[in-house]
Amino acid sequence: MRSTAPAVPTPLPVIEVAATPNRSLPAVVVVADGPAYGPGRDRLDADALAAFEPTGKTGEVRQLGRHWVVGVGEGAAKDWRSAGGALVRAVDEREVGRYQVLLPENVTAEQAAAFSLGLALGGYKFKVTGDTPAARTKSVLLVTSADVAVAVAEAVTLATATALTRDLANTPSNVKDPAWLAGTAARLAAGVTGLSAEVRDEKWLAEQGFGGVLAVGGGSARPPRFVELTWRPRGSSKAPHLVFVGKGITFDTGGISIKPAAGMHLMRTDMAGGAAVIAAVLAIGALKLPLRVTGLVPCAENHVSGSAYRPGDIVRHYGGKTTEVGNTDAEGRMVLADAMTWAVRKHSPDVLVDVATLTGAMKVSLGVRTGGLFATTDELAARVVEAGEQVGEAHWRMPLLEDVAEAVRSEVADVKQAPGGPGAIAAAMFLREFTGGRPWIHLDIAGPARAESTYDEIVPGATGFAARTLVRFAQNYL
Image (cartoon, rainbow, N blue to C red; front, side, top):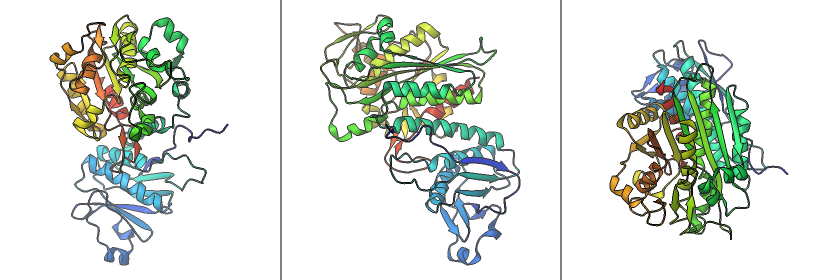
C-alpha cells in the first residue's frame, strides 16, 4: 500500500560557492539599505529599474527583467537569513529552478551562512497530494571571492537537520507510529559512518521496567519503542559525552484526560523534540564532531482505550522511582523520566539535555518564536542562548523554583506528575527528579516547534526548532 506521506528526507536546494558567475543563469543582485547595490546592477533591465527603485529593505524581492534583486536591510545575520527565505519563495513562484546570487565583495562567512540557511529552508514544503508538485529551486550558486565555502557547507548541514526535523514532525500519524519513527531514525543513521542505532520494542521496555513509556503507550494498538543513537568517532573515548533526550509522542489525544478537539490535529507534531534529537545526532555525525553524543527518543502514542493509563495511577519508572499520575495529558514527562534515568545510569553524561513540546504554559509565557530554557548552571544556560543566537533560534531562561519542587512531592508515591502551579516550571521540577544530579538542560519548545505563518526561513507547520541549537551547542562544547 502506498504511503500517504512524502519520502523522508525532503530534498533541499543544492547550494554551491563559485568565484566567477555563470553566464547562463539568471542573477540575483543584493541590495542593502540605502539602497546600496552589490555586484551586478548593470545586469538589471534599465526600464524595469526605472519603474521600481529597490529600497534594500530586508526581504524585499523583485524580478527586473531576467534578473532579480533581494534586500538584506542592515546586513545582520537575521537580515540575511530572512532575505534568503524571501528570495527562494519568490523565485519558486516563477518556477525558475536554478539561479545565482552575486554576493557583495565584503560579505562575511556569517552572512553567507545565514543567507544559505534561508535559501535552503524558506521554500520547504510538506504536502500529501496526488497532483504533480510545483517546480522548486533545484540549485543556487553563490558567487563571491570571499572565503565562505566552509561556512556555507556547515549551514547546509544545519538546514538539513532542520528540514529533517520538520519532515518527521509533519508526517501524519496514520503513517508515523512509534515503530515508524524509531525505524526511520535507524534507517537514516545507517547512512552515517560512525553512527549506530538500536531500536528496542515493548518487550524490552517491560523487561527493563520503563513504566512511564509503557503506561503512556498502553492505550494504543501501536506499541511503544525506544531508539538509541550513538555517535562515537575514533579517538573519542576520553572526549566529553553529551546525551540528548527527545520526547517522541507520535500522536497525543491527551489520553483519558482528553484534549479539546479543536487543536488535536496538531498533535502529530508532539514528537518534535524527539525529531530534533534524531536530526541533531545525524548532523553531528555528518560534521564528524570529535566528541561522544548519544540520542535517546522514547516513542509512544498517547491514546484512549480500555488499556489506557488513568489519573490516580501510580507508575514505577526505570530505576524504581514512582509517580502519581494526575493528568494523562502530561504524558511527555512520563516517557522522558524513563529515558533520562537510562541516560544517567547507563551513560553518565557530562551534560544531559532534554527537548520536548512539553507544556502549553510555556507557549502562553513566551509565545511561538522563543523556546523555554531551564538549566542547572548559569554557564550551561549561557551556552544554549549563545548557540541559539548563532543559528537563529531564540531561547529564554526560566527559573527552577524550589517551592515548586516541594509541590512535586507526593503523599502516595515519590513524585506527582501534575502538581499544579506554574505549569512549565512544575514540569521542569518534575524532570529534575530524574537527572541524578547531573548537569542538565531542559528545552520546552511547545511554542516555537510549530508555526501558523511564514516569516524568515519559517513556513507553516513544523519549524524544526532546536535541532540547530543542539548541533551548535555540541560544536561549541569542544
